[in-house]
Image 1 (cartoon, rainbow over the protein chains, first blue to last red):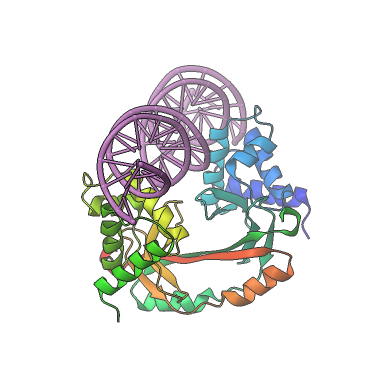
Image 2 (cartoon, rainbow over the protein chains, first blue to last red; image 1 turned 120 degrees about the horizontal axis):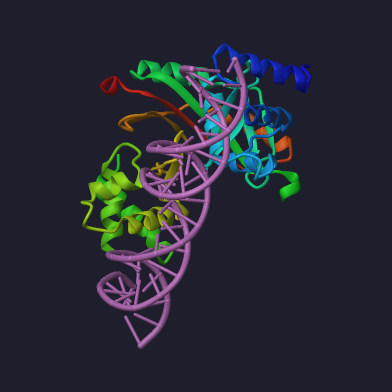
Length: 141
Length: 141
DNA sequence: GTCTATGCAAAGCTTTTGCACCACT
DNA sequence: AGTGGTGCAAAAGCTTTGCATAGAC
């Protein structure tokens, strides 16, 4: 299992590959994303960084940048608010996410492939899917 | 297969069951939802009703009312915007939705049950799920 | 007549954009 | 030095709320 530092180095080298600059806010945000083991909103990330440290806009812009670079993914929620988390290499999975605290567990199985095939036969291309379960975790009940 | 009128009567009797009033905007919105065979945003529904006819706020409020009454469901999309469509009785399904025109096809298979069981074992309750596929339909390509 | 639904205006919340300045490379 | 990132301010987009009036029952 890769340490926090390894993951950070890895993410940083991804940025370099795309000629993106390594700045203080980016390092701080990546480190936070790596250390936090649940999806967080831009606002939550901003707060966790110490709200006055960096601008919320910078957090949004960097999350977008990271997403395009394949470093993080954005999870759209029931409410429309986005949650962000580090991408776990190639692995494809989904979550069960607590509506209250955003605690999340990963769910390995994904049987969406068959559905994607059906969608392809229906004439759709560029297919992606959103699959997330929502519930209330034990602590929040 | 139930006719438009039957479906409308059915929806109206659902409203009555909940002591909700049968108003012009509600009838028009229900009729539109029944006749339109793809999920639409509040804004799109408002426009389709003739933007000046009823207020957009009324559309929002009634969609929320209908959702609580189990008459329509709200589909959260990748972008966070919500789409609405009539509930198809007890049947559970998902969609493949065109990112551009919102054309949608229903997908019958749903293997989420296993995932919900896993989530339950993880201590989550009140579990719901969001599963939608997104793509670009033939016409929009 | 009562109480709910509507319209209008305004605010709320998340996210995006413009622009001047700063700093990574 | 040059390009790309940041902060601040402002706007944009979708949705919700407050309040007085109109309308369903």
